[in-house]
Length: 97
Image 1 (tube, rainbow, N blue to C red):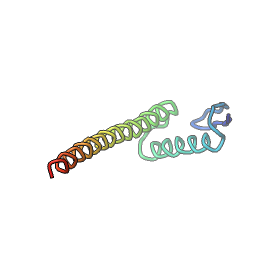
Image 2: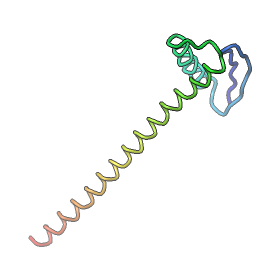
Image 3: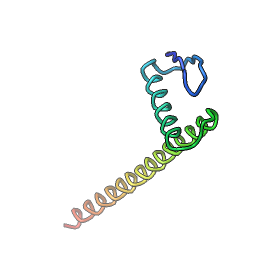
Image 4: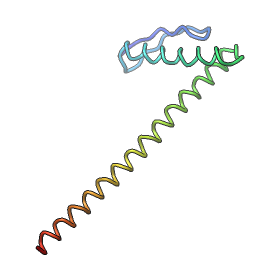
């Protein structure tokens, strides 16, 4: 169980989570990176709006990764099915010969 002191976007608090401290620090660092990028590329100054937009951007990344992984799983299942059918054909050919 880890703890993390959060000081970002004008707020400060501490959390506890099942993950270790280093992992939590990496998450916060990534969130801050996204938030800083939004601040640098937009006119937004309201911390709440920056936090919401940061959350949406990170959700977008997660959604795209999940979709990509699902597509990869489908491709793998198709390959397994093709392999199974190929082995069946080879077996039938071997019996005929």
